[in-house]
Image (cartoon, rainbow, N blue to C red; front, side):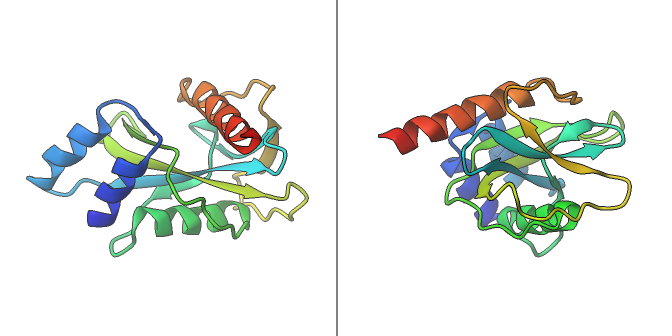
Length: 163
């Protein structure tokens, strides 16, 4: 839980009261945690997404397993869903609270970042294709706020690199 709290504090963006939710959670029962990776190509013009059967195009990610830090869970999920083994950038991009299914409680999710060569071979999970999507292109997701957040973050990375 300490690794989670540290990464929530380090996240560049916080949405939905993630910090307050985590503080309240520390006093009660542990809820599931989720982690994903916003994987950009080296030119910061594309993002690697997976096609989830219910959620549409989403960043690779999933539930953090017991005994894992969110960062470890994000790297594992990225590899399981795309075959990409990547080094995550130091600070998380975002922390948010959302429900991944109408019948499930809200979950704290951490979004990490990686930059990889878009020519890297992809090995997606069966039934869940993975693809590089241009940040200029529209993609369907059950989380409509995600594409603009991911685009803004890519722009922030470009601006930071230009300094």
